[in-house]
Amino acid sequence: SPQTTHTPLCGAGSCSVPSLQHSQKMLRGKRVIVTGASSGIGEQMAYHLARMEAHLLLTARTEAKLQKVVERCLELGAASARYISGSMDSPSLPEQVLREAENTWGGLDMLILNHIGQSSFSYFSGDVGHVRKLMETNFVSYVALATAALPLLKESEGSIVVVSSIAGRIAGPFTAPYSATKFALDGFFSSLRQELIIDKVNVSITLCILGYINTGKPSPAHSPKEECALEIIRAGALRRRELHYPARAVGTALLVRSIAPELLDSLVRSSYRLENVRRT
Image (cartoon, rainbow, N blue to C red; front, side, top):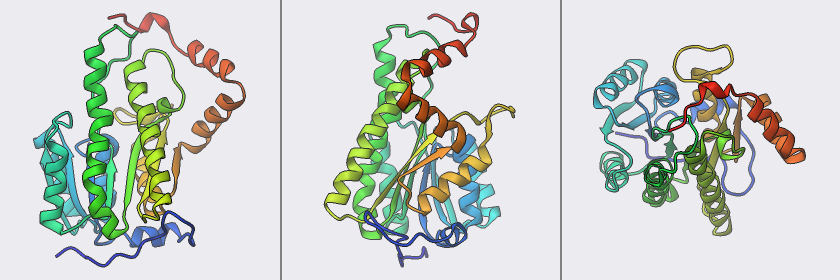
């Protein structure tokens, strides 16, 4: 049966920070939900957690892919692995996922929110319906999952890990609906963190600000998804407030934004080949 003893790494307040190796050992037997786990960063997080001998509940849209990921996780040493397939724009799925965790494990130690809806790279077309649907998947479902998980996480003194993007801190062109959802994540979870600290609730929230990550074909301009996935898990285990990955690129962009925002906007605009951007 899943391990039910819980030793928090640290809480909303201060405590000593364990080594990364120790933090990974502390994930052994922990009960973890990973959304968006059928491919890309989510799939790689599932494999890392399996090697750490965690109990896994994975979600994504495509059942066939999830089945293969679960099989691989069991081969890699996961304490247990199961899945629920479905689209996160369904209002009932968040409750279904948390009900499965409670019925199977009796609790939860870590919720990793990583799923994402499809959005094209193009001029904003005026399609408000698309914005509304994307907000439902990329933002509202994150809120719904975290809300459903909080009672279990309060009991275990667990963690919420929110996978976001540099597009949630720096707004570039051609990604207006997507960027809006990521800014919303920052606002909601940063505010929720403050409330948990005020109430002395020992549940950590880690916001992951990611730059360009290789989630498909390898690219020298993009950071590897395998390393990114491990850094996300480490940040969650260490209960860090934020992860910037890759650290230098994201950190530099955020610094330039704070001291010279118009210069940064100009640099961002000049980095695109407009002939490759479609109008819809």
